[in-house]
Image (tube, rainbow, N blue to C red; front, side, top):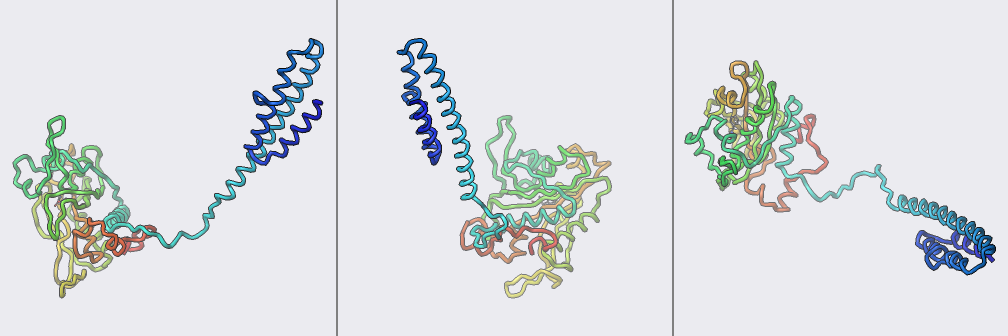
Length: 356
Ligand code: PHE
């Protein structure tokens, strides 16, 4: 009788087609009301001698059945895994789907291009917060409270920080110069692309816009390095080998001497062309880091000197890609994004004219 039960149970274990069916077989045999369990319970009513014999035989069957269930379970698990691996197979050698929908925004693209060009020149990327302390945005840049240059910035002021410090939305990326010099020792060579804010809105101004800051500090850094670096950048970025680059004396409180940089262009019938055509277009501000700025940033101005420049990213993107209206950058118009956006896999690198 026990043999018949064992054979029957082993057969149903072998016949269980999946883990759920196997579990049903287990419950029917070994569960609380399972057949083997019931026989075990019945042992109590037998005399001692028969109980011993039957008990031993039942235990053997019980162990054999439990073992068979475990073996079958492992086999069914392997099958389930194989089925799943098969159904979820991905052929990584297939080409990328061509019908990609999203595009890279021209600002992101331009930032990637800037980073590619400056990385090649040995610069590393630095950043700072959009909400900036008055000290970093103005004071340490040689604009103490009441300095007239502060008025030129149309600053958004925020409620003061817990320690009473005046906070602003940074009006330029120049505070990253201070943060970098306070935390790094020369030689320093960084660029810092990021968002900037000024309370202004018209054809050529949006309250949020982007700049890229560059800072180089070393013992022998001079104005020649500044000129070479900026000229090389302009020619690489706009992909015009003989692009004229002109330095005009200017003023910034945090650089001395200061200059504004123009590139050569032609304006004909509302169209703008870059190159050696006799006309000029301003694209950035620069200069040698003011000794007082070095000093306030913990760098010895008798030993080190540096240059810095700051450039509007929208402006150079508009020039390079022929985008006529600044405000359209931030309207999130899908048609505009499709038209001016970039293919995500077209990663800028210098060999490509950084995306030209
Ligand atoms: N921060 C200046 C601006 O926003 C640009 C600048 C940066 C000029 C670094 C000189 C040196 O206009």
